[in-house]
Image 1 (cartoon, protein in one colour):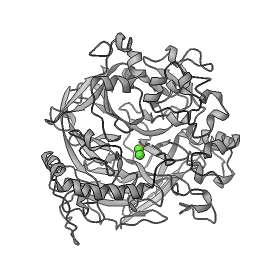
Image 2 (cartoon, rainbow, N blue to C red; image 1 turned 90 degrees about the vertical axis):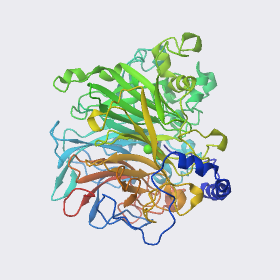
Image 3 (cartoon, protein in one colour; image 1 turned 45 degrees about the horizontal axis):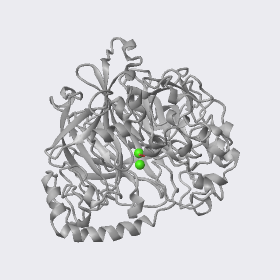
Image 4 (tube, rainbow, N blue to C red; image 1 turned 120 degrees about the vertical axis):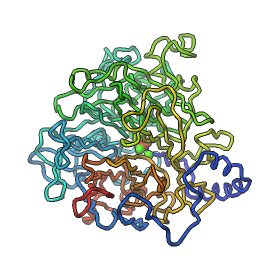
Length: 637
Ligand code: FEO
Ligand code: CA
Ligand code: CA
């Protein structure tokens, strides 16, 4: 999620002041006691000059801490750019200077700010790790480093020209490109018929309980069954039947107009809509003005299903999965055949969700997957003090979700998912980002990136640090056994904390990494995660620049003596976050998105990096890199 920087004081000063205050608070022992009670992996790091990392199962020499204008990877590895903003995706297209792109050209080229990546093997159903489709979200645009004289001061959107806004509308959404590995190097297959763009103008079908609902009808779509475009595509997931889920992470600052004029100001307010029109869209297209088209916001903030193997397939917004600032949608097939989707709502004090399909998926009968995500039970998580995690169903007619409370139908529950979850007493979290399942243990990991707004009086069993600038990772443990035996449909799990992030050398952070963690290995602000085939977690961070270190990717054991001991594998260039980590099935390639390089600059004139091209005065370009071992072996093995 783009952090609004407009009205914030310098975050680094805020952190410095709060940390010194926390040092005093921790002196009372109260918070440390709470930390110890959760059974953490190790004691606080004591700042050893020479750390012992021999216990880690991750076999690579850790990258030394580095933060400059380019990317870096551990010795013995390559990190090559595969595809980036403006790159060709059609036969005959030339590589051009992205400063010359117009909307029509952008609509046929790779989008901006790459985020979630799914690698989908070719042919479909194979385990091919040398040829596949990269399905990549293009979350948003950093216009301050795309166009001259458009500072990120809250006024940029109002100053953009119609042409600039149109280009930006084509630069977001999702990009599918076929990629092939030849002699160890990944490259785009430029003339592949699978290559495809989804933008703010692409038609999307609406399915599930909200299809045809009155609140979904607009002048463009009087039937409420078709949306133009997708927006803020952040995390995602892959289904067992070979489709990709892309998550709309809240379109609140995309709209202009006065929300008080709509029939549902309380709902839009609960979803953060403020009419700010941050990207200038409402000035040129009245569908982004809620005073003109009040239902248009209701048509975003969903999970979208894309079939990358069928270039003619229309993408579908699956409303049964709820309306929120969707960060991720990790899909598991449970042992009984039902399909489970874990989802986080990435905003301050929002919740962790789970969807369980009503029907079972039968791989022998591909038709059983059709519309299976349209019917099922959406639940929200309560983390209890006794270590139990309870999933509470968001089902109309149960508990307080009644007509008297504004929930006459399941469609009402889904349109107002957050409000329904409030009523059920869900546990407010420190900004839930990615959620992924360890394929070996069956344990589920939910990443809380940070929450500077958490006050000391608002702590709960699983969010234990006030002014949490550093983030933490929650472990959710389904009953029934390990791996495929785990029951991801159970009403009750147990939970634990994998670790709390922060610099362990600064006890005031309350960080709880393994005691052997080195000065290079600790991290802050975890965001996206993935697992390699051996069940080791790889954590990508977003927000480390506030601590004067690079965002990057860290590998870490979740089991055994080195549980909670991270090692730095990859560092991004200045201003960028690392996101969307995804392995090929054989574990020899880890794809990672380098999102918003140089975004920390006020304008193009002051960018700190022109990554990845470094050609004269070229613009910085977000891009996907492929991390591989130089000898071609499995990453970290
Ligand atoms: Fe798009 Fe929650 O990061
Ligand atoms: Ca983020
Ligand atoms: Ca994210």
